[in-house]
Amino acid sequence: MNSTIAVVGTGYVGLTTGACFAHLGHRVICADIVPEKVEQLQRGEIPIHEAGLSELVAEGLESGNISFVLGAANAVRGADFVYLCVPTPQSADGSADLSYLQAAAAEISPHLQPGVVVVNKSTVPVGSTLLVEQALGRSDIPVVSNPEFLREGSAVDDFLNPDRVVIGADDQAAAGRVASLYLGVRAPIMVTDPASAETCKYAANAFLATKLSFTNAIAAVCEAVGADVNDVLLGMGYDHRIGHEFLRPGPGWGGSCFPKDTRAIITIAEDAGYDFSLLRGVVEVNDEQFERVVRKVESVISLEGNTVAMLGIAFKAGTDDVRESPALEVAKRLIAKGARVRAYDPAVHSTEVDGLEVVGDAYAACEGASALVVATEWDEFKWLDLDKLADSMLARHVVDARNLLDRGALRRRGFTYQGVGRS
Image: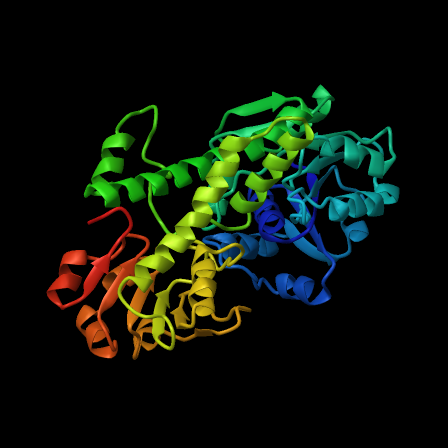
């Protein structure tokens, strides 16, 4: 049976959640507090770069299954479920700032019909389900945790074809009702207590960050001993206990989730009396990786006064998200050492980084540059005209932080080439 779902917040998680539930046949009302954004969404204009999302929103608007309103109160009246998808930014001490979550719960409380299920979809620390219950102040409203496991760039597919659906609730009837929303989604549905569900999200991201940092550390070992990291990781990945996913070296990891969530779980552990030294080491290795990329550039040119071209600004391909982007972190460090950095990204057309020039194509980024850094793994970079690239650059040096380009073809054109974990 289809339900009426209110989604509070139309950021990355909220918009994907709303559009996908509408696609599954539910009636969805999405709320935001920014009038211009609501008007934009009502016209079917999507403010983020996410594969398949604009098509789902257009489909929902045409069918009437999705609508956009200003203010949470206007969305929740008459809803069967309310999904809270508001930001939980990182505080100065590394913990999650839950003020938006508390404010949203307090705002909607007077407008909820008895028995509506309020669902935490935001990434929240352990105990947040209880926090929302307290902010609601309603004994007739069950609160359930339903964490998201969406990868930017493939969020629609991850929602509709998930590895699992995790539901945390003390009220088993409420958990069953949330599970019923996913009819038509073929995936294991795991029902547990709220604390376990909330911890599951942080633990998953922390483990993936650990795998990435381990991969980059192995790449450093490969460089030291003359091994090829691609072959080493291929051999590791064939072990079914390890697998190939997240065994790709790079300039470091970033984005909206991994940095925030790893720091948050370190803080959660510390508050509970456990020193999560392993995960602190994971964060330290990631910070070292940014500097390793900078040192690679320094090994071939003097940074002071020279231009460095950067291909990629987004934290990963398939998205326009620049939050905690490794590309931007490397760019900042190059600029701080006197380099002029000129960048191109297919999905990002401006940044707030002082001194970083953003241009309209890869060749414009490389014009007059003394070195080129490949920072984001966009497929279009694989097919660049290397002769044109060589002619446009002042000096032919490539630091391929994604191991994306054909190093043999570059060397035949007189380039020096440095990858990650490769001789």
